[in-house]
Length: 298
Image (cartoon, rainbow, N blue to C red; front, top):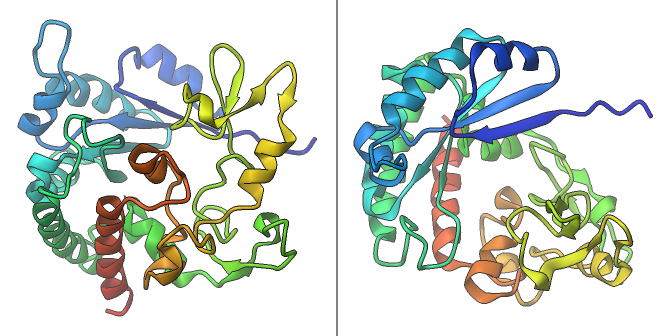
């Protein structure tokens, strides 16, 4: 009672016609459009059933309709290992050439067999690409052409740098009863991810998993909509925090109070253990954080 529901739809745009957009307006719905920056990068991975590229369709039809609507929207652009030295090209294309004001840039999720994932071999290119992207972003922000809040992940980390720390008793480990200090731009809760605690994923079959990235993995099944959540499963998630878990490298990382431990799916994909770290993904996050710290002190 008294709660306001908000919804975020991530989509490739299919079906976003004027009728549907008009129906969604004013209903606390935001839309995140998947579009990977430059035409050649996008069309290498995102193809139609006829194996033709989708950039012109998604940008020209669905992106244009979104920009005309009154619905809050953002472009979600993935970056890929083999193209990771071109992150600036992707962002510049979306922002300067096509007028998308709000961008989320993120790496591909999955294990090392996932197409486009950043690996140890392509990591140096990705770190270099992040540095070049950061220089472009700094220029846009300092010139007033872009608000720092409109480019994630910089906005996420900047928010944590400028926001006061807060006690996070919601996430206190059950076996200690101690408060943990931290800050999050989303929840100010001291963790980045509330998987298994205040975030769950419900499958089409009614099964409850710790989050959408573990859906279908029976090791992270927490219950179902008929029987509810298993208390032992909830106790596991509510009693473990990557920043303090001895299995994790987080407690020794300089970026831990800005990163907030990242996503447990890193460890699930790489080690089948959500408390372990993925060195490649951690390196990418630290590079973004280091550049955000520079902007914060400019």
